[in-house]
Amino acid sequence: MEVFDRWRTWDDARADLAATALDTDRLGRAAAAAVRWHGDQRRPTGAPYLEHLLEALEVLVRGAGETDPDVLAAVLLHDVVEDTPATVADVEAGFGPRVAELVDWVTKPPAGAGRQAKRAAKSAYLRRLRDAPRDAVRVKLADRVSNVQTLDRMPPDFQRRYYAETLTYIVPLAEGEPWFASWYAVWRKRYAHLL
Image: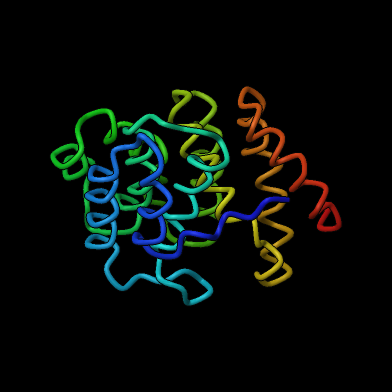
């Protein structure tokens, strides 16, 4: 199973992207905005949050072969509305309506109080993704690849719950996306012991 973790900093990503025809200036602006909005936020592992965003970008570029600049900007910004004070309007002002729409599609709405309310809201959000535009689905698929590619580093109860959630909601989204379908098929076998 291919793991996407070469790009730990924007400089790492930019160095690899320089050999492509991609607009690295625009992607650099998106990465800088994400860093500004996410601030000192960390991943559960303690790593800077930018690493997750760069992993998702790497998945789309190196794995899925995505070249659409709006989709690539959206993957760098996909969590800013959900996890920071940034709004969809802020994203639109900086990156245009299409990027804002993609970010909006993959933003989990706020949930009520309590674990059950949060899980119900998350399930409703994941079901709603079936109606999302193809490009928003690709952003979500890349986001989840970043989150599950090293699932074994998380606590066992989280691993089982996240594996089941990914099989239920995310893997079906990959059916129309050959690269993602193949990657998730290998991932599913790698973590099949979690069922």
